[in-house]
Length: 283
Ligand code: ADP
Ligand code: MG
Image 1 (cartoon, rainbow, N blue to C red):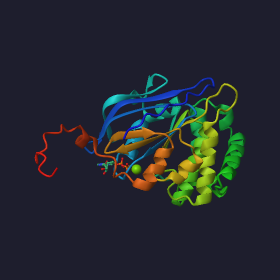
Image 2: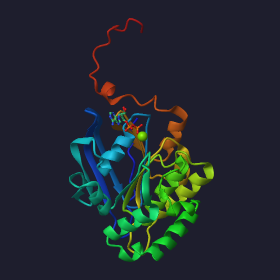
Image 3: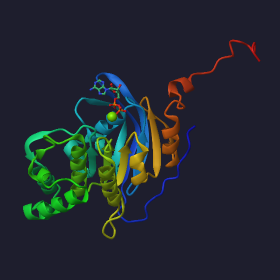
């Protein structure tokens, strides 16, 4: 059932590559990821779909280096740099961004505080200037329909699920990373908000100023709706900690119709098939 997708390589300059190879990881003492291989280039959108509990969020946390997630093997390289050796903040500075499935609330710290500190730490002093940052935040908030009142409020505190997803998108837009992992960015968003958020991400994937490559996206989602706006180059199906199929955008349509039932567990597929115990009794 596995199909091979041809990956478009962006022709723009300074293109980056995120290479996940043989990634195995455990959480709570249980191996969840059993060897993930995936290569993502600047400007590409790869969707990851899969049933609940497949390990999609685990993958996102392992990529970003969340405490409690134990890497058992494999590598994650961004332009050759091993991210698994880096602290989370160093991965962020290397250009990786995660919009988590459940963004945390941080009382007492505003969006402007967070983004100002992040931009300054990344050496973007001019962008971190309060006036410049304020103008940028206001413009980006308007683009995705986030009320300006959120900009001065504590991060994610008293925000609805959908508002938190817009706040994540705002951070993505301002920080302009090389690669973004979006874990169910569509959850909690109404149709209009979904379209605005997806279009903003889609815009980021296009090459920016001359020579700059576009954002590469790993979009974890359950729904084709997001992918209607955020046109994926490749769709991967993750089942029980393994990518069991990869294909073009049509794969998302197939999944919407058929669900994941057709994707046999790899362990079962890999089992040697013995002689037919009924010996052709019923043939
Ligand atoms: P998905 O995002 O695909 O729905 P997750 O990555 O959240 O799946 O979870 C994969 C599996 O890992 C599930 O069986 C879940 O119960 C388990 N898991 C996730 N986090 C923990 C944890 N902190 N401790 C133990 N098991 C966990
Ligand atoms: Mg999840």
